[in-house]
Length: 393
Image (tube, rainbow, N blue to C red; front, side, top):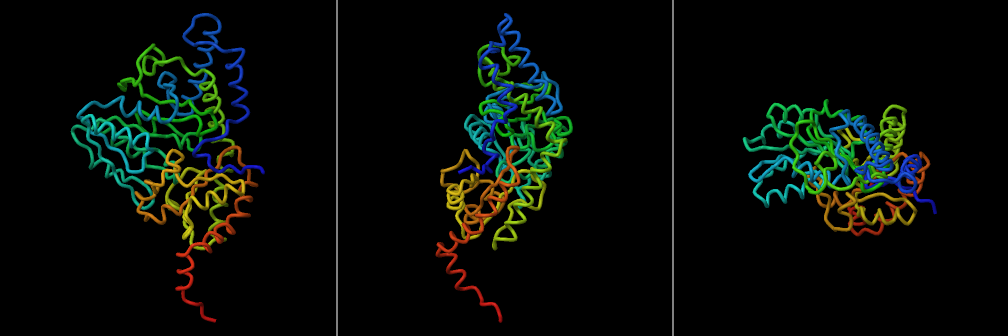
């Protein structure tokens, strides 16, 4: 059975061109980039090339890129790196747990945190950010695109507010990189996180943009790597892969590949809406990243539908991968005002560059029947149908 993989917001396949770019650095071209012999110099040159590619994707200078192990480390480095005990932090209720749990830890060491609500679309109100500012506010951390619904936040407006207040601004762009054009100067952020495995680089590598002049206290202490901002021997093969992924992502924003993915997503949504009763798109009325849809199926538990699709060879998600199996309903969907039941009856479909239109066809071929089968097995659904008025002849 061929797997139809539509869980790209959890992780993506490493594209063949990226594997090819990385392979020599595992075998014939390996070296420690801190060494001054030929192998070390070659490894350093590979890092420099990748740093330029990532900077090009984000619209910044190469010296403003710090390589990390991924989104969680990048978020932690950004959040912990610019605050001190007594600082006030502004964030939102729908952030990734890498930010939310970092803020909880900061509260334990003497910081205060304001967690802003979102509206029914899943969007933060910039005016709420402005009103939350205090004299002690040191950091605003609002994600660029949500990992569960794909909703895009008004980060440019928030960036202007942060600049006016002279407050550091961090945005988690893990789910935006490769899907939306990113320009850190247009956004006005001081710190921005990306993670390679969300846009077809390998797991275990990412980057943090740190605007020149932004003070950043390192999380790890050791050697002078990454200009003293992130100690430890760099992951050369992974960073090379990240650089190649950045090049491919930049091209994809221009060559129509991202637009094709958006068209497939839109077709999937429209066909599901037409073929299945009592469904709704969570966050549909606002801007979203082009590859993501989060759909509510009334009377159908999301995890049950996920497992039924999995038996058909189709991989999707019932929420953030890091919370899978926890039994808790989505903090993102509940923050949007969805009730417990609707939050638990929602699935996320997220496409990637390895997908084809045939994958959408495969989902549409089996999904309506699976939904109806699960509804027929639901006592709540049977009762609702029994109580429904009979249509007039």
